[in-house]
Length: 453
Image (cartoon, rainbow, N blue to C red; front, side, top):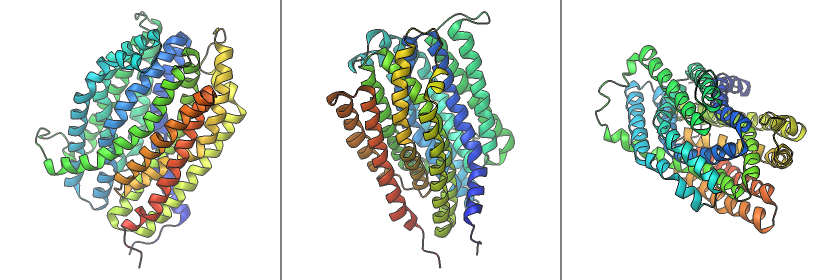
């Protein structure tokens, strides 16, 4: 009989597994942050354009990333059972599905301009966003492959290497941005096009890193040997788990993308403020996302061993860890908003005062959704660990589209609260999701395993 782990033991295990994942997510976030900071220095319209383009890119990226994230609980469960054959089969078919998805959606980047214009965006902002997407869209191939291979490594609890590879990619992105956006070090001044090239460079560095590591350190899995051979049974299993995960992520990201579109109706300056505030809110979210990934691995291990007591105790610990982290985000956004916003703008920016005023108000609202945002993503991680994804997808869609999106529009434009109203709608959607998903885990997900004897 496996001895019961104490609450402190769970906290320590989650921290050991989760801290490198959190660091990796923060390093990944730093890539987008670098784009935002440097384009904020370059120009308000350029910042607004890449804010809009980034939302567009991530709608498609997160939908396709569902296959990579499906690999995480499936490999972790297989590892708990010492099933190396299934580890290889799952990872390969995750790579297959990611490649197929990227091929299917890349044309959407080429035709982004008419889509953005149809969504009511300003012509100049839409033109620059489309210019960025035509190039950055090709980065979807390496980006999705990286998700699969990082999930494979994280499921095997090799999280340190995930962190270091992502840090290397962040540095590559930063250097390329500095050179190509502004024309430094003898490079051409390319503005938003330079940011797109830098983004692709970061994805390629990540892909090279994870592939080389898998080949050298884990040769026993033979991930790329006879890679072209189909495995339709496992293909179907990864597809069935991955599609709901992708659609769940799509539900949330379209809520935030929809908020960017709505704020874009208010003009380039409010959209720039939204982009900055969203970057800051995303920084704290990355911590919760790392905890969620750790929760998935831990829950999947318990699921593979059919250990309900271990699952329940670990779930309780990770939820309280998420709540504790939320406190720091709330304090930072309420006490230091001007200092945080100033990181993204030059002091002589003519729009600085307006952006600061809007940004301070948005960060106050962001403080409201720290807790619920963290809990909903941790709940999703736990549910994925027990391979429960279909019903959570429905809950997420209802929360984000039936509650969050309408609330954002009504509060922002019917009640004329502007950007603050749009963000209050985000709070409503995230709060609904956190309640439904936590209830799903504790009332159903935990009971997928037999009760302890």
